[in-house]
Image 1 (cartoon, rainbow over the protein chains, first blue to last red):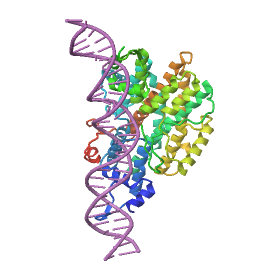
Image 2: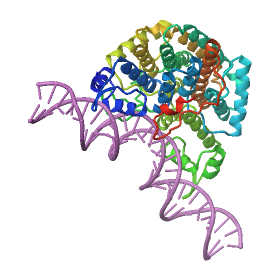
Image 3: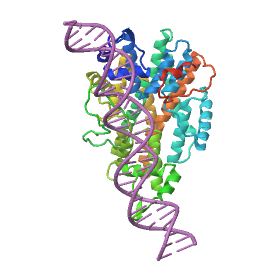
Image 4: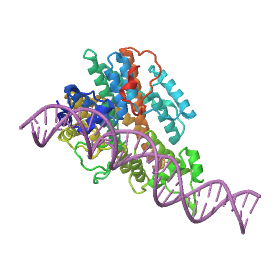
Length: 233
Length: 233
DNA sequence: CTTATTGGATAGTGACAGTATCCAGTCGTG
DNA sequence: CACGACTGGATACTGTCACTATCCAATAAG
């Protein structure tokens, strides 16, 4: 198919597809002549994947590129790709090597070890967790990494469940796609569900709030251009 | 204290404090003369809160302003503030009222009702969840909202736990602060922990990845296509 | 043969979150 | 009291990100 058809079928504007092509998020089509190229379903699929990562996961374009490059690399072992995906899809590591942070990091390392989890030393999630600990202390006084125990329990259970789900007998590329999407989409689902649950229980505890017109919030100030979403964050 | 001292003690540059002042994230100090104002610990505290929301929660400045305005409003019932905080701190609602999305929304509504959670109809988390469902389908074929069951279970448990923790006997403002911080910080912690757990179990399942120099990630690398740097590892 | 499209290159846009510069009024030291 | 350093406030500038828009020459379709 031509680029315009790819655009129609995916809902992504042509200019944006060109941009993704430039950035290497989507492989080039097969040139049939100097001014024509053919795209197939694999391109469509890839485009959908990119869109999910961008819109649901709010993953920066550059990070999507890095992760997908790893996914595409045929001679990279599965475990490597998974680790790369996790690292690439996470929040950017804080450029904030304060003493405070380093100490928190050490505590988090110990906490993780105590749980029996073994992860790579450079995992950005460790830093993220340390940053959370620092933040918590800066606002609500001193505490230890053990405040995370219930969350770690929940995370452990979910991770076991998710891993049991993966079926590596299918194509490796597919498996990876599943993992990438799962990492991002289920994460969003999880946080949304947690908020809903909290809203429910806090309403139960502190009284339901009176009915009002729904809150208008954070308009990205972009007209109603169809298909074009600007998401902040 | 002067602004420069506030800056030193909080680690936030003076220019940024001025910016926050302009945006109303931090209340003005008490003017002691035409060119002098005094700030106290409440300002310092507020500044730390703003920084946590921005850096850990990645909440846009405008949203921080909206939430804090609600927090500061003395004649707003606790439940309202909690709801406002939840709505304000969430991801921006998708400006994406496709049929697909509306259908997913209805399914999510039913799913939430089935769980016995009662939340406001306009809750952005419902939309977020619906968006996740749409995304999931667009990439990995059809599925029902029931794929979220295990996540909802985990969320339910966590929310119960968190709510049990809140002690409203203290000042209301404090309680709210706790909730706001908790919503954002523990969310990040939960996400990080889930990733760590996944990394652990996937390493266990698919073989630990060989030791290599730690992954450098998401370099802006202007000029080169982002595929380049992820390749040779 | 003419005209409409297409792919590719280059430049422009708008939101966001700060930074930097100016300026006049004050403080505090000699 | 003189005067240079500092302060708060207003205004303007910067950099990044993710797109969009414009051009252009080479086809492809009619």
